[in-house]
Length: 456
Ligand SMILES: Cc1cc2nc3c(=O)[nH]c(=O)nc-3n(C[C@H](O)[C@H](O)[C@H](O)COP(=O)(O)OP(=O)(O)OC[C@H]3O[C@@H](n4cnc5c(N)ncnc54)[C@H](O)[C@@H]3O)c2cc1C
Image (cartoon, rainbow, N blue to C red; front, side, top):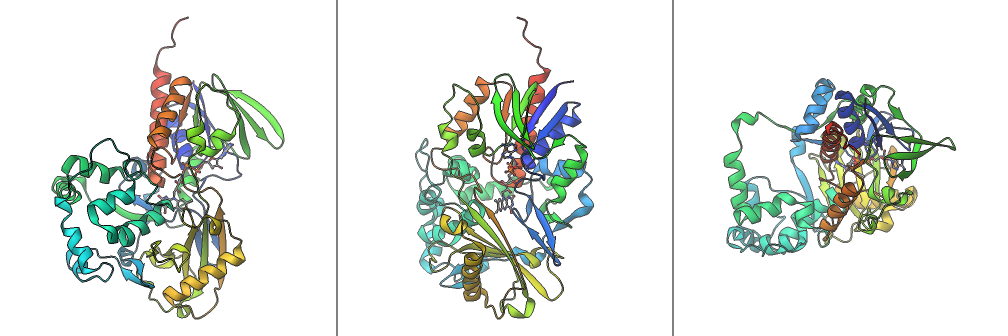
């Protein structure tokens, strides 16, 4: 039986290990911390259910749906409240609903009349010459106009990547938009084409969802299925040619040789360990992972004036009197997230926009966040609950020039065929993308292990 080492028990590593185990491979997961899930983490305290990293999953990912079904977690799934289809974006200091239909688009105050007219001209904008690694901001300004960038795209880039649209690569960070332009010459035509081709046989796809007891349910179920194959508090220190891994556990060093190794270490961690290779790893070490702080605040329901009738609100960078990137109305989004008569608001701060605040201490952060929430949602009392989770290195930024990162990863894998890389820096940053990248890595390792060993 082949012996495969998987480094990291985040969603990518757990999925890779689960799939390999299913295929009859002897697998061992090496995890530096004392828990599984990586960025996924749920805590229940004082009647509040707090998500420390991701808050929700999207239902459109096949690999993710198949893992959930195979783990028997269907009955644990909770779908987002209908009210969560409203999303607010702040303009001129007020949360405004994002238009979701042609009528609300015509009547919204989020865009000026001239920005709406400019948007209607999108199908007539000529496409960019191929080959250029255009930034998200440049693409949106060119096709949709500057106001759409400021009030519709920049806030989402802040909310998803904690990123800067002027520096993110369109084709790497939002490949679908890039492909719509290159294949259909226009986003509008691309959307019409996608709507026409959406098969009615696809069945109803799940929208946003979580689990009754929070997202930790998914890594916990994977860990249970991996039954004893996870070594916690086991930090990988070195990788040696051929698939030998040196780990430290409780101060003791151990070395183990595997037939294959899957690394799901964040790129900064991979380039920090001792790994002799001819391949220049600088492009991997240079990928920014800006700090993000999550601040979960509980309030008495009567102490918040805003009805919190939505998913949450995003703050565009042009609204620069505010410091928060956005707030999820967590107790509206999913049931049982706050005690009766209370609400839970989860706010994100930092990212490429305000890295200093991503590192701020709880007292200063809490004061700053409450100032912003007071101005935007109307607070009439102090929080009844505070939980601060700092992520010193949060989300990898798919910056312009990211093709070089992808090429380096591929060169590294060709130079060391025993090593396969997976994680949120490879196919997208969502939980579903990271999960899929783990599943793909397991497939590639299985293919390689199935090949006859070349005779000497
Ligand atoms: C604040 C925040 C909010 C987010 N919100 C969402 C959301 O709502 N929806 C969504 O889909 N995505 C969201 N994401 C993104 C998503 O959570 C991540 O991209 C995804 O979970 C990453 O999974 P991964 O397995 O690639 O990496 P990780 O989860 O980072 O796992 C890597 C693992 O490697 C371990 N490790 C590190 N060094 C070593 C070492 N030397 N030896 C052994 N192990 C080591 C780590 O401890 C960790 O467990 C969010 C992320 C953050 C930070």
